[in-house]
Amino acid sequence: MIPAHCFPFVEPRYELKIGALPLASPDLVFERDDEYEKELALKRACMDYDAHYYCQELAGSEEAQREVLAMTGADGEFAIRAAGDAVQEDLLILDCGQAGLPLIAGHLCFANAWCLDDKMGRSFMEIHGPVPEFPTTIGPSSEKLLERLKVGRPVGRLNWAVKSTGQLDLTSRWDGKVAEWNREVDARNAGERCFMRAERQTLTRLERSNCVLFTVRTYTQTVASLTREQKRILLGVLRTCPEAMLRYKGIWPFAPALMEWLGEYTNEL
Image (cartoon, rainbow, N blue to C red; front, side, top):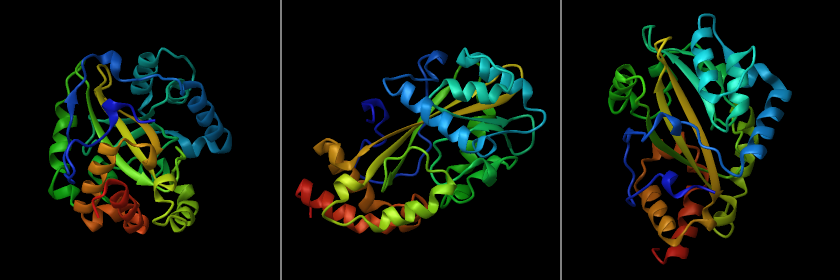
């Protein structure tokens, strides 16, 4: 279920914005709930399948990895692996000491339609290249936010998608199955077959390495189980979301069916 503080919309309209706000405390970077053991077991299954696919590091990232490991309170020789194995969040480390803020280490099990093979070593702007209008809208300001982060003052933001499955691991290797699941959605079953997917993202400046830790905590629940008001808001967002963004987020194949279902449920046809 998506906690109330992680529901990503306030108004029933689409808006592309950073929306980053200070966390009340550095201790709030990681959140643990009743799904902790289940989600760590899912991470272990990912690692058993292909550890390199889900966890990678570049030379020179060792100090930053150790800082992240210390934040989690875990221990282990392969620091980013041990850190990611101990928390529900996905972990990504960006190097602010290099031009472009490249991704230098990651523990990524619950990504939405991407993987470390696609992004490792690439700059922040390159990583977000597929996002429609990113370079001309929030891209430059997002990069400045990373560069200006202060030690001890992490920030958080929310991201969203709607998927035809509640599966947490939607890394690129699942793209074919997702396409199949998309085709199974229609206006009768969309509420139960479509899942709201919310990401609680945080950014933390690491003191010694001059890197930034980017965490992503993913929550899902069926659209049918959202409150009536949340359904109304989601419908408004989908109706005002540009086609290019709906395609990027993977919603376009079933968007008409989902909007019809939401319209009937909320009496807003």
